[in-house]
Length: 122
Image 1 (cartoon, rainbow, N blue to C red):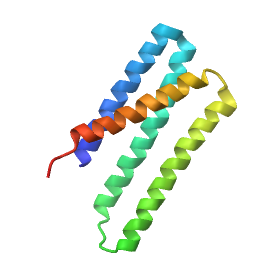
Image 2: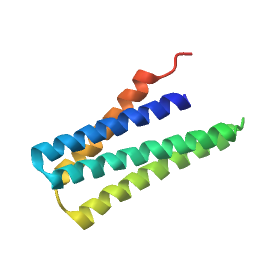
Image 3: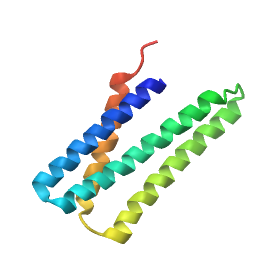
Image 4: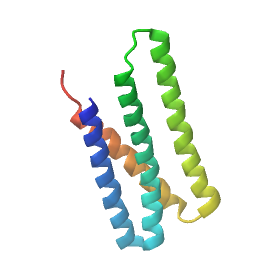
């Protein structure tokens, strides 16, 4: 599963880069920057997931409550990091919000579809 998650992140990075290039061609540098920032927020989400997955693989435990606690913690960490990144854009930059959200959406969709397509069959 770890290899699939790495490949999904690589696919997600390529999709965000292509979307940034399309934003540059279609809307200029400000749009491209906004798309790349939104895609970067989605990549940060996947990177946190990969980091927690690696940490969980090293610290194997059979305690259900401990495992569930780690799952909730990881979910909350990812939620708050992505939320803070998006709020920072809206609060500080205030430019091209639709392009930024489009980049985030493209990044998230690329990560989800790549994870499903690359899932190891067991």
